[in-house]
Length: 60
Image (cartoon, rainbow, N blue to C red; front, side):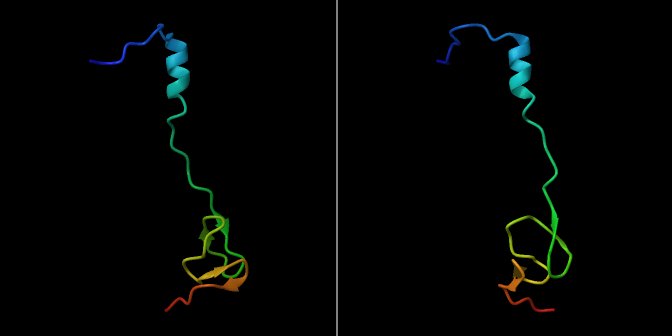
């Protein structure tokens, strides 16, 4: 058995619901220490710093 809708959904209502299924590029910011692009509020992968402090030791 499947679920039957109580009322018919119009084409515009269906399409407005489906319009939110879009991909967007991730937000990138410059690292304050080394200048590499990283996602905000995360430790920099290239230098290991967060909020101008070294959090993770990165080996070269």
